[in-house]
Length: 195
Image 1: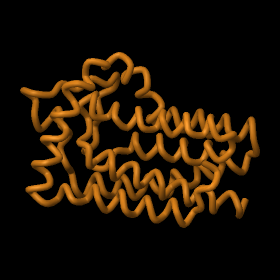
Image 2: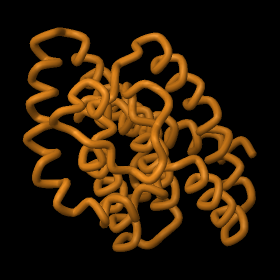
Image 3: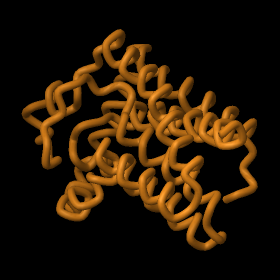
Image 4: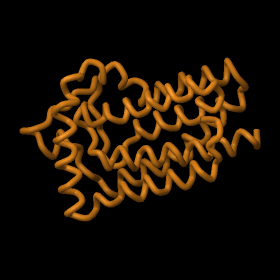
């Protein structure tokens, strides 16, 4: 995992982010909704598992993780994670307010129930939880030996699928949020070199 260069992170992040924007086309939005329903129903069977993982995508989760990185590694790495998150979260907030995509449980109340411990108050697109999970996975994985880094990537994947299981994000919301996480990780790596 520590071989992913900032340019690779930027390239993958931009590709994922742009792919998620495709939900703006009505035909793609219908496909996204259909894929959501196809994934949500079987994933919902593991709802308690995804509710436990939910905290890893929260603001509290990223603050604790960055604090641990700063305490156990170098303070510059924890600071870089928080600074990168602060920059990218402004873009996430701007997109949420500009696009205002309703969450699945709001758009399809007959078919979808919200299952996360805290009701979200902001729009669906893009997934901030996927952003945070992938930012942490990609930055912390750089500090760990290979098996542990890959375990973090697996955990970020589960957190991302959990957004669908909990009924709060469509797949393309998660794809774009993942892309923002990659971009934030690239920024964090760059910032680590400056601090």
